[in-house]
Length: 403
Image (cartoon, rainbow, N blue to C red):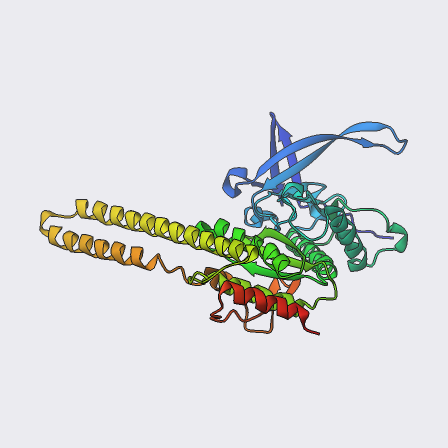
């Protein structure tokens, strides 16, 4: 019986004089040319008798798939047990929950894995890290249709098993895609389960106004308390955006009423007419908060405009210094424009516009997505309501008295 000899792996590692060299189809692949690193790591493993022995693995560390150009069409079987590591930056999940980590491809076992190091210190989700790990473990079992007997084992990484015939490019690209999808689906599921009875809005504030605007949002709880309703508020951040969540203590209160009250409250931020006559404690407190907010916004706007104009003036002055003397007339004209812009900017800074309304991210549809489709938020209208503070509080009180 004739049997064909087993085909030798295409990749070989040659160790000589303290160096490690990679060959593909007997051709040397230079680390310098493709900017990857070849190294060895030692670790303990257990043999068939359960004894620990020291093993040595050869690895290739690359910053991106592009740096692995000679290997991308090589199968796992042809890698001869070599481990491939894709660096943290290239294997980034761009997730607010998981630290950037390496994707590790073990050609010996045919496994690609991504370790889940959670950002515990910066956790801002409405579910706990434990709930996330439980959720992604269940999602993993369902995705790969694994046996029920494996359930109950909590994952700390996403291992994906590949056939040894699979090529390096496919393994790396598909493993990252699957890992990202599992994390997204888990976030979507957990957030939707936690979002019942919750209003969540996403704001994209100008960086120099962010703190002042967030302070104003957090006073909404006291505003509603003065109107007779208690709510829990939460501020969190995602990709530079501000997520503002409102949860009423009375679950029988319709979220549409909270939504309408919030619309009134955000509109009040631009009320520049002090209430006349005697004010209650709640009305005086609200007026003081609005006045303080408007003063902060005005000051920050003036400061930011002045800083921008100074930078512009400095750039023009530098350009002017590099010009010939004959161009000084043009430079003087530009300086005059800057002076006019400064006067205009200072005048405009006294009118902030409705920063809160302009920063609220609303799509054309009736609902909008927060955190990539996780929490659905009903878009509401912040119209030019001309309410003074006493009238606004009465309107909100009446709102919660409706049947």
